[in-house]
Image (cartoon, rainbow, N blue to C red):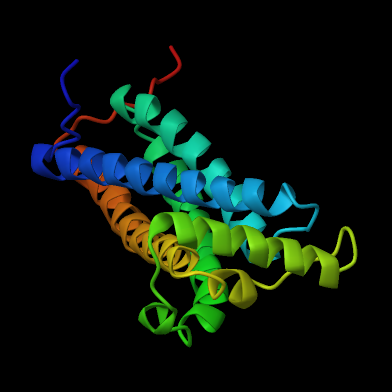
Length: 199
């Protein structure tokens, strides 16, 4: 299926590239956060609300992004403004997520955490979780800083989630600029449907 030009084919292709990069980043975030939630829930502790919020927002954004691509490909002229509004809301959501994750993570130095091979790291994480379960009441919650600082791997993965959220802020801001531009280019090129006059 050919890419719709909207009067500016390079901008249209750039938008589709941005959507593809957004999907890759969101799949990465969903995978990492779901792994954290599963690991923490397996010992009966409530995961950090920052991780749960990130997972929820990213799942909603992924669903929207997957649905928006076919609408874009079907020459959604007025839909470009609707997509701009939704992209703006998602941009705001990911800015909030990035700031929320960044507050505790910006102070954390992953390379200062003791380095161990993967078997020792996994065993250390398991014993750390078991001691945490003994010290935290059942159904209690742990903070993001505590979870990210438990192992070097957790720290690096949490910072990767933070970095991907920042990348999504950049990608959604680009799409917020491109979508109205494509509409105006399409209007200037005369590709928008004319008003139907009553006979």
